[in-house]
Image 1 (cartoon, helix red, strand yellow):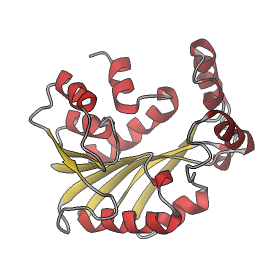
Image 2 (cartoon, one colour):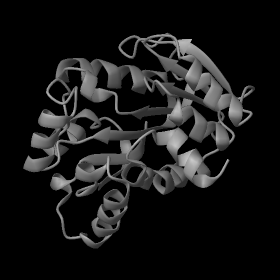
Image 3 (cartoon, helix red, strand yellow):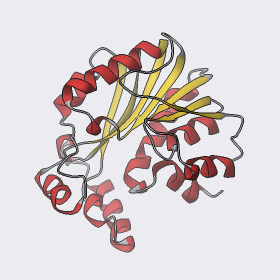
Image 4 (cartoon, rainbow, N blue to C red):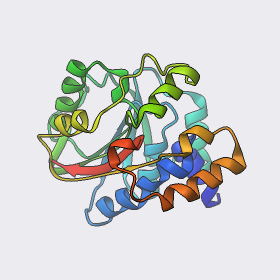
Length: 224
């Protein structure tokens, strides 16, 4: 598989913005000898694909059984022996304490109310081994126009509980060695227009002066 196909299989959409997480995640896993990982709540198993590609045996989980499309994507990369599947409620993870070296989450916390997010993060913390890592990427509120565009044009935009920076920092407060970065400004508005999307992505690189609070994706890692 070529790089573009791999990135699309990992992220699914808005690849140019979300894939900025890749070098950050690599930084984490390449300096640790991780063996066992858990992906929570990603319907298409992109995190499991990424981590399996780096030699980590994964449990790919969702609140419902992972669908056949997920399994077919993984099968194309010959990761049958690296990925197993499970049905897991993120608020009650069915594994013992200190079990996983790494936990991966992408775009799941907006599904939960703030009080429930705390339960999820406590469960993640519980199943991580000492010095294990959480790798994440999440939707942020972004600026005023991001918020309006989501309400108007994203089917679940009014229901999703987007993060502010303060929300994010508070949720991850018990973790150590946090590396948190932010990306995406113009790209959100042009995802459906291929050429304009590419141009917006290039312009985002130039808009380095835009404050992090105005960007709509966060990504990074942290340790227990």
